[in-house]
Length: 139
DNA sequence: GCCAACGTTGGC
DNA sequence: GCCAACGTTGGC
Image (tube, rainbow, N blue to C red):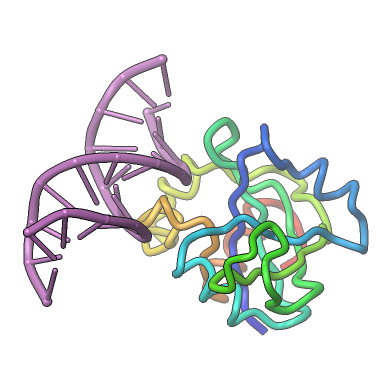
């Protein structure tokens, strides 16, 4: 069981849209970065992830679950790109901002802080627990 | 809206 | 195989 973080610009695809997809979930297509793709290839059904609003949000707003393992990205014919499907699990009681994360010494090694350009990234068990507590939700 | 940081592309 | 040029991302 691994933990991840998915970034999306809320103006393009936000938490409300993700939630509206319900248990069916949504293909996390359109990722054109090898590192992000490799992370998705490593995901298993049932893995959990944070849903982060980039650019105009800058906060983690909820938890999603991988509901379809790596498969070809339907938004391209290029065979290099695979992606998973994710579905919303539950929102945070309270969104956790990037500012909060940066200010927390326990989270200084998070990829979110150190490689801000990676749109699909791993989260450690420890980081998962800390952020769930800050977000006032069950880990 | 700007621009630094990063990743990718392509000429050599 | 190097690296300059280019495109994109995302924090500010």
